[in-house]
Amino acid sequence: MSKKNRTGVVFSTNPDFEYSDSSEDEPETLSPNQQDLRIWLDRKGGGKVITVVKGFIGTNTDLEALGKQLKALCGTGGTVKDREVQIQGDHREKVINWLTGKNYKAKKAGG
Image 1 (cartoon, rainbow, N blue to C red):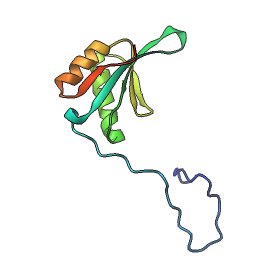
Image 2: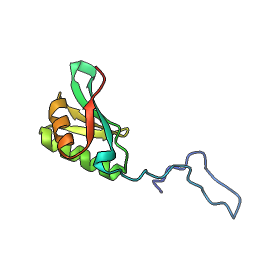
Image 3: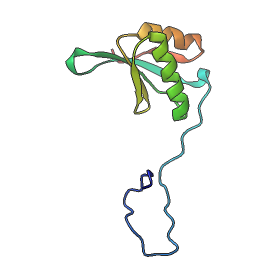
Image 4: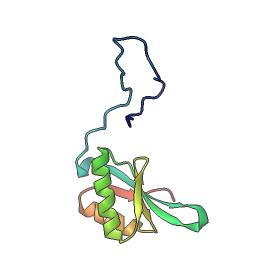
């Protein structure tokens, strides 16, 4: 069975029918000095704290690579979800220093 998400199309009797994918293409990855990243601190259930990096413009592959580098830098787990990098724990200062060292525009946000 195909893994493609074809919402709304179950069956067509039209022999010339072609499924048109309405999803948009991924944006091209901007250079680090054009990125404007915001570093948030968020609280999850059970009082858990996570560091969230928002505002990355680029492909999912590049976002995954950035997330992997940040998780390795902090020595902790995390995930890339909903176009955000989520890192377990409060690592805002470390993340901001690393990102600015790599020529990203990054600053604290959200209180």
